[in-house]
Amino acid sequence: MNPPGPGHGRPYSSHGRERPHWWPEGSAWPPQGPDFHRGAARVARRVGCALGCLLLLLVGGVTAMIWLVLSLTGTVSSAPLATAVAAVGIGVGVIGVIALAVAARRLAVPVRGLVDAARRVERGDYSARVPLRGPGSLRSLSRAFNAMSARLEEEETRRRSVLADITHELRTPLTVIRSQAEAIADGVNPPDAEHFAPIIAATHALEALADDLRTLALAEAGGLRLEREPVDVSVLVSETLDAFRPDADQAGIRLDNRVAADTPTADADPARLRQILGNLLGNALAHTPAGGSVAVEAAGEAAEGGAAPLVRITVRDDGEGIPADLAPRVFDRFAKGPGSTGSGLGLAIVRQLVEAHGGTVGVESAEGQGTAITMRIPAAG
Image 1 (tube, one colour):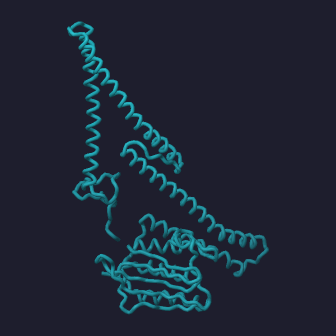
Image 2 (cartoon, rainbow, N blue to C red; image 1 turned 30 degrees about the vertical axis):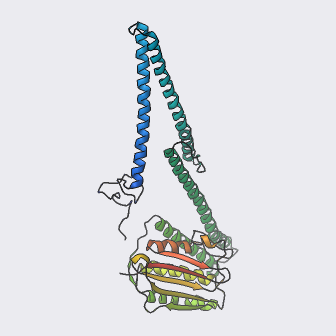
Image 3 (cartoon, rainbow, N blue to C red; image 1 turned 135 degrees about the vertical axis):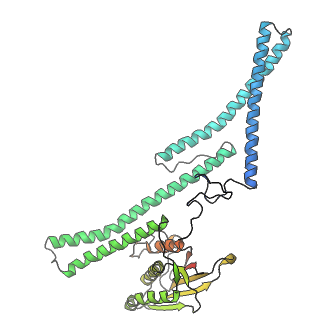
């Protein structure tokens, strides 16, 4: 397991002081740097200006009241001077009140909009957005609120789509099980191995779907445990190809092993790496016609910036390729082409497992010209 990063365990701090839970993960606490100092100076100037206005309002109002009282009681001998001073004080006070009212209105309108939008989000309306207006700090807050609500809306749309896709994937095997079981129970079909076979196959499909969903859920929640060890990539690729060779021979597809002799060992969980290769090979075989070929390539690769070396593994086929509209989301859950018969979870699991290893995965494909999916994972030290 990798050591916890920022935001896990004790709060991240670059000065030995704990970061508050609401502070962005990975950001130094207490904040430092020129941007922070400029922001602090700007806040100090605004606070100073506000205090100065309040002080001016207070002095003007108090002065006006004193001169009015003195002039009315006759304490001040020069009534015209007292009246003038009082008028000036009252004028300053009125100007201060007007300035404060304008400032309060300038703050109140965007704040009221933020409050209304927050209530809409609380009710589940994630389409709520607020206009960017008011002082700079309020515009920044509005911008952050809009980004938050946009992300919530995206997550809600994704959640509904996933639920609909899961429902669709469950319906087919459940329909098979129910129809076959009812036919046997009604005496339409005899209770023999031939008619139990579709039920067993459907239950296997349900089990596979449940396992895939569990793997995805664990990986996305960061709860997927990896038993990492040095893995001989050449041996693992050979064993995985041998497991798929009977299916490939039956489909008339050639399997090629193109692992370079000097490929370094990988720092990986062998079971999960075998699962990744299995998903990629199964997907490649399903989309390669008879007479085609599927190859697994592997080699070492130097990482940029002097980082630890990598192992590059590519599964390449000369099949039908990926449609242009599907290519950008091929690693999303339940992303499937028109003729695909799988659940659409295979490549999503590949991406999650590769990223759990600290690696990356990408795809190169052109419709009708084949597909190459390449992953890079850390080499053993």
